[in-house]
Length: 346
Image 1: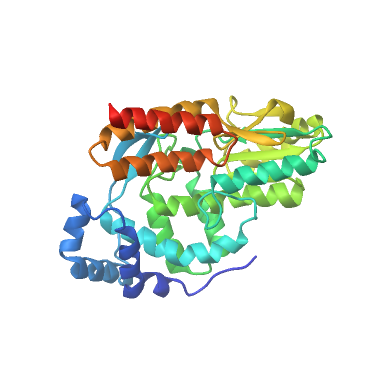
Image 2: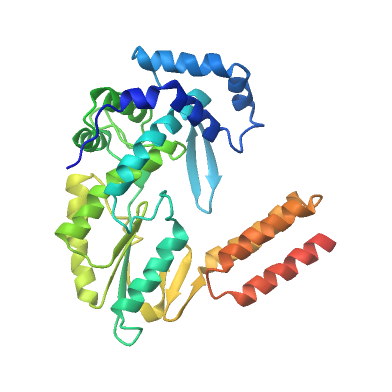
């Protein structure tokens, strides 16, 4: 396996830290904690650099809060100082790890994302079904409480195999160890915070072990993953059902993860394959019903919030229309435009 060396100096270099700050502050220039950090920016960056150079850096605490997107998630927000470091680490590690990931890993990667994932599923189902003339089935699975279940010792073991730099691994251990979920105990530390940029990379590094198993051991021809949500497409329903045991065994034995018992399904393509907010069917795709409802509610809320600013309100409309353009939702798009003009004129 390829290993990376001599990374610590690159990560902790002041140029990289200032670049990380520049990227981090985008869209956050009015936040009080960001303004406080920026007030003495050079002193803060050089102090962070000094602590990293002297190996005296310690990750700070987190501030917890909940968001709904649409399901309720517990976000943990690190201090500005720590988040700048997260960006500095990401700047250097992402370009090295990304080429190791499979092409059908779609989460938190450049030129990937939900729309690319759904497009892949459309192409895969068309290929397996011989242009919708043969049987086609889709296995869809979810990991149970993924971010809370990532095992620290397993993650650090994976990083140790790939990063041949003791200082970098030690720094990553400090960041990983700064958080533990409620599933942790005295003997097993678990969990990575959804709010950390590094958690996006850690999630892909962790689940890349599973991706490689699916591609090279199971040899699933049509497999894709988005964070903890994965699908397999095949022309044989029993083949997909039989996959569940080796999949479950690997996740449990190697990654200490488990499938969500209520989010495992095998569907005929003609009944619709629900993935990443869309339902893929022969020849077309639709928005998931819950997603469609959320679009209407979201537009109503955003227009009310920004009614005094027509430009901002229109931007909200266009963002929703953009999402709808990826599906066969002409009627919904027209209804949304009518709703927008009604709300803006009443």
